[in-house]
Length: 88
Image (cartoon, rainbow, N blue to C red; front, top):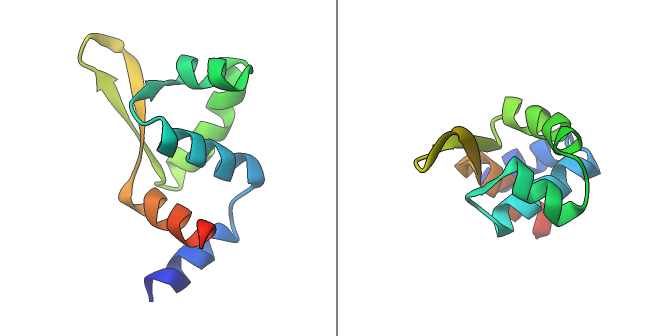
């Protein structure tokens, strides 16, 4: 049942969204700036895609306890389920 639900979400994701989710999953707790540097793209490029997957509930942003103005990125449980189905 969960696999079917995850498959449904996968069909509504663009390749850039899946790639960003994979990157966040492999680098949880990194900031937008750090993710952008890893991909050699601008923060704006990451932010555009991030807004889309955040609105779908696949990513959560938590404030950095060391710097309140900085957000750290994590996959939500929903995002992890979608990736698990995507990779299988």
